[in-house]
Image 1 (cartoon, rainbow, N blue to C red):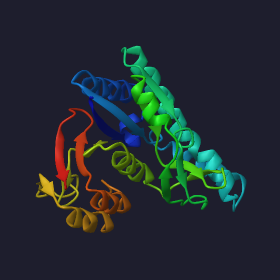
Image 2 (spheres, rainbow, N blue to C red):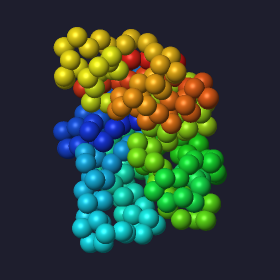
Image 3 (cartoon, one colour):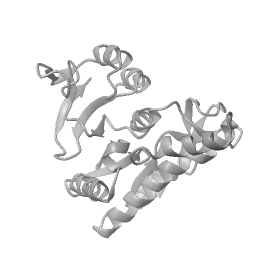
Length: 242
């Protein structure tokens, strides 16, 4: 049985056609080196913000249920386009929403928590030789309503799926080449960490390091899932969190 490799792509790594094609090549390289990639994708670029701005320009206080219906379309755009890009390079990908894979959450709109993975859709697709491209940041509430996790929730989706599918690590594919001691764009003395433990990373995430969602770090620690920060342009690991 091939090993499952969870790959999570942040929105900036899928922001345009060129980046989508680049992401497809990186997934293909993992696929051809004997892994079964299970991909979690964020909405591309700033699409979530664009959709939210649109809603708030129409109503000062839109219903949270309707906001969830609206913003979950962002990830659907990403997973469908990424799946199309992969099939164009002969990788048998299939795009799936959070509800299609049975990602059950609490019923809280715009800030749900993951409860469980119900059903065998994801495993079935893998057994059929497909590469699942899963919409991050979303699931389905116990009340059968579409829900979203907290902002940055695609990181949490990826770690949760790794724990459910028995993957020992998650590749967080980012537009940065690792975790630094300070913002490397602002501080020339910023040092890149090769390895961090979960507690160190959690503190950095809480203090505003936007590389990872703090909840994803906590979940990874609880489930024993190693996180690798991978640079989207090279496919190389910059920082390992374990």
